[in-house]
Length: 305
Image (cartoon, rainbow, N blue to C red; front, side, top):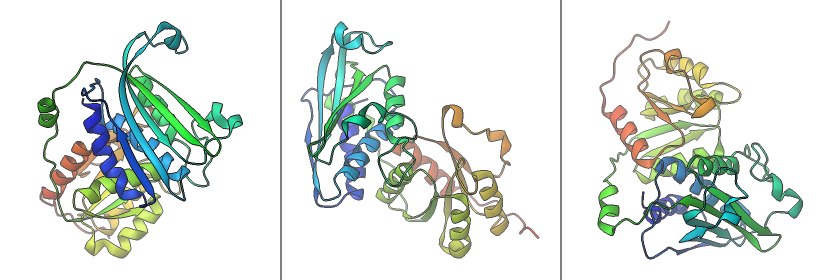
C-alpha cells in the first residue's frame, strides 16, 4: 500500500472531528513509500494517534505528520526481539500538546491504561499491536508542555508509482440513509461515524447495547440500518440484537466484530443477520458492506408477540 495516500485519506476523516484551532501539517516523502499490510489496521492505528493528539491539545495546537524512508541498524533493532535490520518507512505523528509525564511514559502501551477522563485506554495498545503484526516497531518522545511525537516504523516494500497509487483508490459507494451505530469504544465510534458521514449517511450513535435499543425504539421510523458491536458493557450485542428484532423483525443489522480473542462466533447468531464486518475496518470494506445490506431486499418477518 501507498503510505502517503493512506495518511492523506485518514487525515480527511480526522479533520471532521477536530476544531479549527488545530492546524494540520504534512511533510511526506517525495518518493511514494510502500509497505505490505492491512490498510484497515494501519488506518485504525493512525486514527488512534491522531485522536490522541487532538485530545492532548484541547486549546488548539499543531499536528504534524511526516514520512521518510530510513535504515534501522542492528543497534536499533536489538531493542526489539523480532525486528531485523533493514529499510523501514517511518511515520512520525507529532503534536504540540500537554505532553506525557515522565513517570507514566513506560506504561502508555499497556492495555486499559489511560491518562484521560473518558475512554478504555485501548488506543495506544491497539497501535502497538498493529505495528507488531506488521513486523515493525514504535517509539515516542514526550515532554510536559512541549508535546509528544510517536514514530511508527514499518518494513519498506519499495516505491509505488503515482499511477499505481491512484489505481488502488477506488470510487466508494455512497448513500443518504440514516444509520444507528452502537459501539462502546469511543475512538472506534468516532472513526466509524466520520467514515459513514463522509460517505453521505446521517449517523446516530449509542455507546452500549441498552442505549442502542432505546435509541432505536424511539427513532425506528427514521433508521434504515443498525451497526451493532458484539462486545459491550451494560448490554451485549447478542441481547441487543434480539431486542432490536423484537421491536422490528425486519430491521437491517450488521454485526461488528473484533479480531483475535474478541472474534465472534458467527454460528451463535441466527441466519437473519444481514452482515458482519470486522474491526478495525477499512473505509472501502465499510462502504461496500453498508451499501450491499441497504440495497438488499428486506425479508419480511412476523412481528414477535
